[in-house]
Image 1 (cartoon, one colour):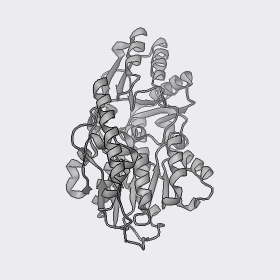
Image 2 (spheres, one colour):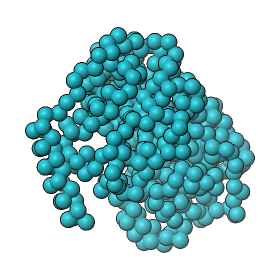
Image 3 (tube, helix red, strand yellow):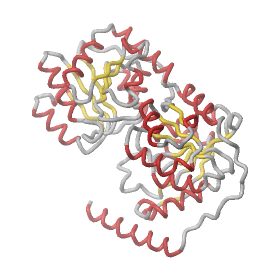
Image 4 (spheres, one colour):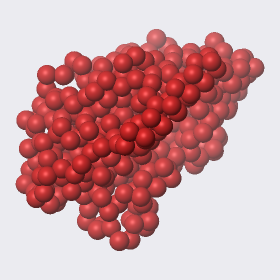
Length: 409
C-alpha cells in the first residue's frame, strides 16, 4: 500500500482516558494532513450508567466535527447492558458504512476487536496494544490472524507480543507510542520553594498504586520538605487516600480535583515541578507525555513505556525512574530533579516531548507502518446480521441489568 489516503477509527462510546483521547486527537490530526478520516462510534441516547460524568467520543470530536466523517447510531440501555454479541453487531453495521479498503485503528474493547476482525478482509485492521497487560495480550492472541499490523506502545509490549505470537510476521509489529497535540509552551513561575507535585490518572491501587502517593509525601514531609500535591482523576481509592493524608496530617498539602478537561490538566502541569506516576504497569503514559510537554519533570516507576526513556539524552535533567514500590528511591529521585535549575529542567522536558511524543512524530510512524499493508481486493462485504432470538435475549438481559443498576443506586 502506498501512503494511505483514508483511515478509520473504531471506538466504544465514552472517553476513558489516554487511549480514547489519543484516538480523537489522532483522527483530527490525520484529517488536517489531508486524509479522509472516518470516526466510528455509537452515540448514547442519554448518559450511560457507567459514564460517571465522562465525555462521549463525539463530544471530544465536536469542535472538529467538520474535519472528520462521523459514522454513528443512537445507543441506549440495550447497548450498554446487552450482550457482547449485540454490541459487536452494532459495531459491524457501522463499519460497513465506511468505504471498503479503509484501514481501521481499533480501541481496546473485545467487542470492537471482534467486529473489526469479522470484516478484516474488507478493512485492514490495525490493532493497538496500549499497555503491558494481559487484557491486550489476550486480544492479540485471539485475533492476530485477522489484523494487518500490530502497534505496540512500548518496547516491552513489542517484545512480549513477539514472544506470544511466534507465527506472526515480526516485520508487522511496530513500536509507536501514542502522540499528543503539543500545547503552547508557557510555564507559571512558582510563588515559593514548595515542591509542586502532581498526579494525573485513575486513582486506584490496582495498576496505579495510589497508596504510594501517601508514603512518598510522608517521607518528604518528615525530611522537612515543603510540598503540595495535586491529584487529578477519580477512582475507588480516593476515599482511602483522603483518610490516609488526613491521618498523616497532610490534608492541607493535598488537593483532589477529580476529572478535569484537557486544558485544565495542562494548566496544572504548567504550574507543577514533578509529575508522579507510581504504577505497577503501564503502556506509555499520556500523562508523562503531557507533563514533559508542559515543561514539568517526571518521576515514575520502571515499567513499560517509562523505562524506554530512562537513557534518553535529555532525561538526566527532567526524568527519573525507580523500581516499583521503592519509596526511598522515589523520594531521592524527586530531590534530584528539584535540585536541577528550573529553566534547565523545564527546557529539557519540553525538548524531549517535542522529539518523542508530538502527534506529528506519531502519525509519521503510523503512516510508515500502514505502507506495508496489502491493498484490499475483495470489496463485497459479508452479511452482517443478528438473529431475532439473539436480539430478544440481549434486550431481556439489558432490561434486567439496567433495572438492577438503577435499584442499587
